Image 1 (tube, rainbow, N blue to C red):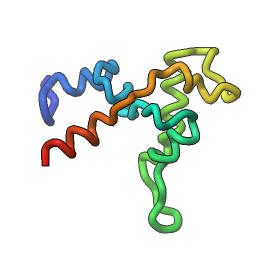
Image 2 (cartoon, rainbow, N blue to C red):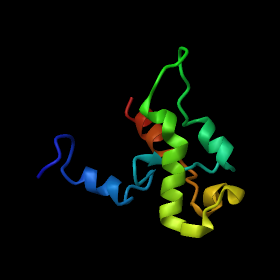
Image 3 (cartoon, rainbow, N blue to C red):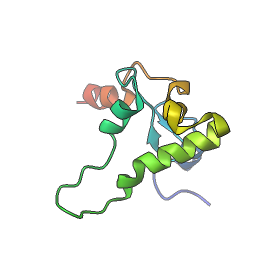
Image 4 (cartoon, rainbow, N blue to C red):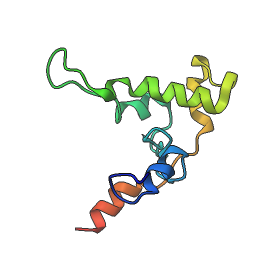
Amino acid sequence: MNALRGHSNIQGLTDVGLLSESMPGYLAMPLDTEPDLDAYYSTRKFKPLRPNQISYYQNYSKFFVSLQKAMFGAAATAENDWAYDYIPKLDVAFLRRSCASSK
């Protein structure tokens, strides 16, 4: 079965975490300018535009915790910000840079 968008292997790359700028589940890799979990969440968590607005991405923190527990098991705890420090941080925002250079 081929994916109905982009290249047929893009879905597989994102599912197994082979894209350097994203983690499995389409979660963005942290940048080196985001030293802690609060800074990481601040740019990615859903911010409602009106009261009681619902969005898939309001659960971003739940997705992140689930991924961290899957990768690091018992080592990912609330006390250590779900092993946030275990994840490499990008020193370049790939998507932002590639979008800017294509203009």
